[in-house]
Amino acid sequence: MTHLPADFLVVRTRAPRMTPEERRDAIIDAVIPLLRERGREVSTKQIAEAAGVAEGTLFRAFGDKESIFSAALVRYFDPQPFRDALRAIDPEEPTEDKLRQVFVLFRERFEGVIGFMSAMRMESGAPSQVVKRDEPPFEVLDQVFRPDELTVSPRMLGYYLRIIAFSTSLHPFNDIHRFSIDELVQFVAHGVLPPAAPATAPPGKKD
Image (cartoon, rainbow, N blue to C red; front, side, top):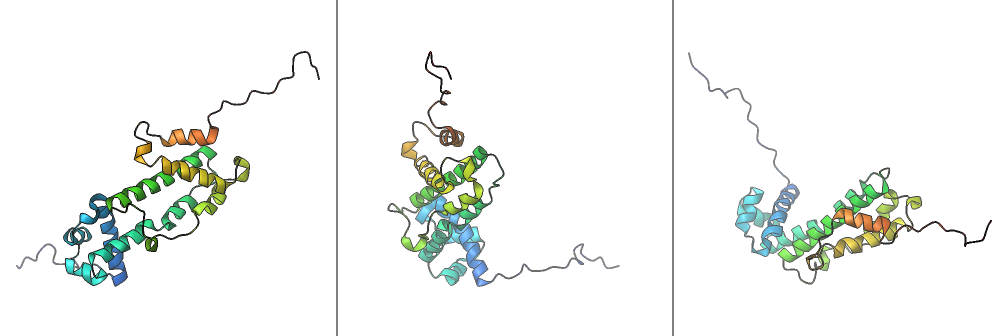
């Protein structure tokens, strides 16, 4: 009696072929962490290994290494994922919880961008061709915060939160004291002044 291999009846299928655009996207997804870690020193061999492709595939998809870097920069600086994350905040949550989530998103965004720029030796900022020069996504905050729960407009709140998150993402400003998210929320929500005491009538004066 002939004994068949245990996997004889297993139907073997190949993974579906990627389109050229899907292949480019997969390579970009693989190269971004490498660029953040190693900057421009990363080799095409390392990129190919991370993406699971041959080096020749990289050049067929992008032409040269600098084109890979440019595509990664465009992807990384795209503000749309950040907008989507802000839009996903539940407007029914308590105000301070929403402030905390916005601060976390801003801090992660700035720290990521600053770290990426440093790794890529972009001292003067990202090239204009890879950054979408549009308004900050503060119109999204109109959907997150109600006007009655703030003393400023949601959009003005966005400007305040952005400048605080940016400055606290710069290491020279935080070497002595690393501001936590909770500290920043407390500062924005309650300020530095004690609650005002209720007004009292002058001595001897009666209603």
